[in-house]
Image (cartoon, rainbow, N blue to C red; front, side):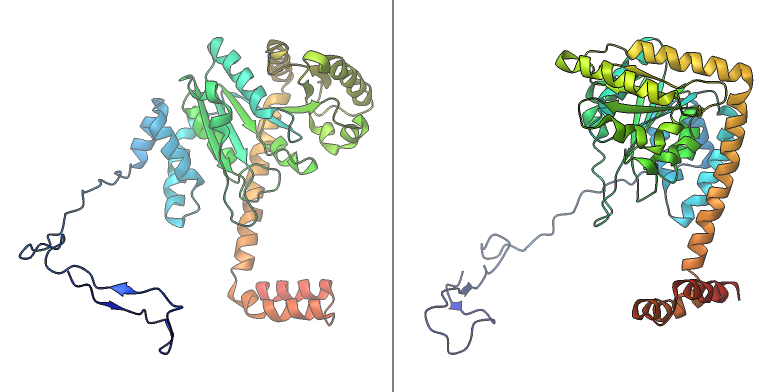
Length: 375
């Protein structure tokens, strides 16, 4: 080993002792500096890559309730890769006859309402009654990094360990309504796997939550008491879409406030049109912490399903939601086609600059872009 020192390249030539950094030559000989020992490359262990499943293997695994294949199938249909789209649709096409037998429940509410705690309490209660529960938990995506924490399994520690339950966190990816673009397809995959209760937990951002209404049978709005003016909750348009309101955290000293809030909401609901034909929306209380009221709200959901099924509203809603799904995908495709159009991309910067400079009115700018797209 040599002890020769020299200055790094970034040190000025005429630098004095103020630059104390120096570089010492490395060892000579083998990897350990012993003369005559040749350096031997250590082979890296081979890490086997997961074999890509075929369409038939995906279908068979999902129908058999294989949790690993179920997770892979959901990843396939959620993928934005063009190469995965056709295979994912083929899988869905074969699974479609095995879907539609569950009750789909959307659960939303203001941040801090205890949605995850409530879902875990409800999920455990349903599992004990013999149901198979799938939880599709949507986490908000960062507008800066596009990433999500996806920590719902951590918050639902007991439910995530129950083999009768399946929790799938997914990023919202900026989707309005806090529901991922592929949530509808994920619901179908879970139904084909035998889950008879689907719980869709949304981000919980207020009025933009309306997207979830278009894909679930029963829409539950979680509220909390003592967090401010109750009129703020009453004024939210989302109340008009809920099939039931549930004031959570009705325990301890907060129980009196929760009951008072329930009464206020029931008075307000008296003046709103029902979200579902033939069903009257009411407010209830529960405590996800103690479990009080969990069984009661499930009985309400069961009564709702029986009533709307007998009246035919259940099937009509499912049919309407399927058509809404078709046109939402058309809108998504047209949006992507517009912004990926070469002609639009060629004049977009110029048009945007004209709008920002005040030379082109926004309406004219939109017409210019559309004319280029259509022409």
